[in-house]
Amino acid sequence: MLGKIAPRHVEAADPTLVALPEVRVTAGERGWFLVEGAHDNPALMGGEHRVRAMYSGRGWVSGSRLTVKSQAEAARLGPAKNAEVAFVGGTAFGFDSLGDNAPSLVACRGTWAQVQYSLSGLDAEALRSIRLNPKARVGAPSGHVRGWLNRLCDVQETSCDGLSDE
Image (cartoon, rainbow, N blue to C red; front, side):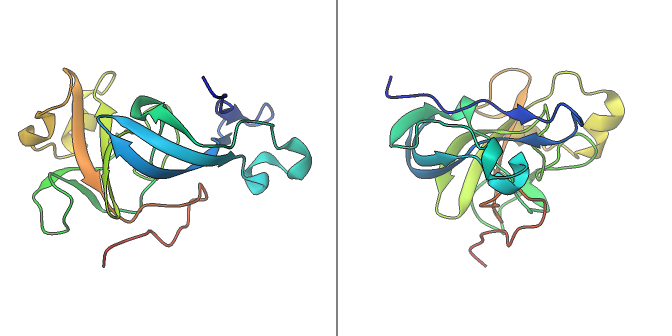
């Protein structure tokens, strides 16, 4: 092990305020990703004085430990804007969320990220809201779905430019 990246930060005074360390993904292979530059975003931590020390060099991290934020309107079955829709965010999945049901990273291709969500704990209404295409279960572990997102956010703030191939 080269080092550790700090865990998610939950603000004690307001548990709805969550911040994760940000990393730059430079490569990926079979569910593992080469990351570098891990750091806290001072704006989300309440200032420079609250930024945590952590390993910021290069190292491989499992995609199950990484999450993605996106301004996409829908997850696709492939990394292309004309690919069939896998599911939408609905009330169950916030593509722009760092909450408990944030997606884990599975693969990357250009400006697209394949993500995986757990379906556990979703009620019938939430499942209807995501308009799940059964093909989104292909390749995913039982109880999970996968889809490709574009318009990726390179920062955690809710408004981002949404990196895109458009």
